Length: 267
Length: 292
Image (cartoon, each protein chain N blue to C red):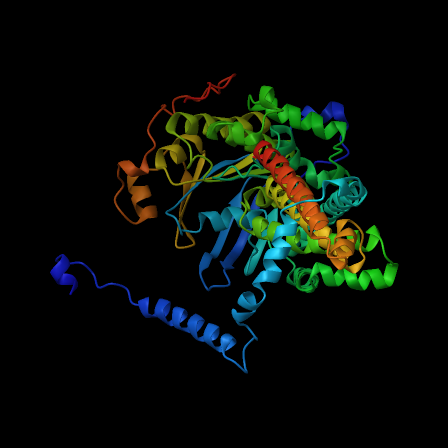
């Protein structure tokens, strides 16, 4: 077959069947999850049956209640504050943890394994669940929200930054080791300077996520806009809800833009 | 052998550090994957020698260099640097000994995003507490040594530049300054000019020769180009399959000797060319500017 295309052309490597197998498995899993009885109760009928309901809500959402604006300022500001505080604390905590979780900066497999396992656990729990439990522990307000966000930030920043460290250049560290430095000195003097850009990138990314996340944490009583969202939703005030959504959108866009500017400068 | 005391007062910083000898006995390096780096090597290098080590890649020259500062540990045999047993040193003692041995790498191994000064100060870490390192508060004497080292390689004016913004030759000079800031008894160089163009390679080799001549430091240089090995070393050691197959004066090593070391005929690819290296015995006072 290959000889027909070009003399001396080697045979194509095998393994294309793997792609078809993967597609087949995904299709099978999808079919099973949709199957009545075993899978989730999912039908498009619900949309058709309730479409009048839906269009009514959408109609309300399209007409924001601007007079509601003054009441949203304080919770919005609280949400932003929560995001900032949690991002800064999370970032500071993440610097040493990232280094303990990466092979290049922590050659000891035991301590590295412990840090990585703890972080896997921290990351496995959703932020909303942290907030719900923390509200029960420390009471309603911004504090449980901030703690929940810090845990969430540490989970993702440490994972992403420690991966960036692994793929970094071991050369400067080797030079410092050859000069008689301890591991801590190697990390601080030779490796940290080159870790800053990925670190700042991921910390900013966490901050962007925090602004979104902190809006919903209030649903379980952890402060910020979420409390207000919960209130207006309970009273079916979709016109007020749409104003809140608009405000979140503006804030998120502004913060994405600001962090893009910072990222560009860090490069 | 006299030791360099870290408590030397600042005024005496310019004093030449005492060079160290190197003594290997039946030294074997076997890597975890079974590859033998060094095979029962016995070698004496006197304090203050300038030694070229040649061999093909995989011949064990990197293993030899890295064994001397303990980056690679011996599987069997003994290693003395100065009057210290390097092979037995662990932890604090190992770091103290490494602090007296400078190392220069093919890839420069500088932290690119920080300043030239911070990179040179890495050479002072063995004499700096962890607390001082963490906050970056190096002692005035350590800074002084860094400035002097940079001045010696002609890079003082770049002290606040980012390392990554320098050319390859300049980066290697900063790396030499980092090694000099250690006030070392030995300087090890692992293919220091393999990533440099010929004129820059000669300038860097000239720097290493000056370190040896003016400061008396024992210098070991891994090379694969025979004209550099012959021109800059006083003594030549040839390695093949982890064993010493040549040991003698560098200048009188013949092409036939190199063919025996390499196990194949010598060709143009084994020569760098460029400046007449063996003729320019007078060390330049100021280094030539960077080409490119």
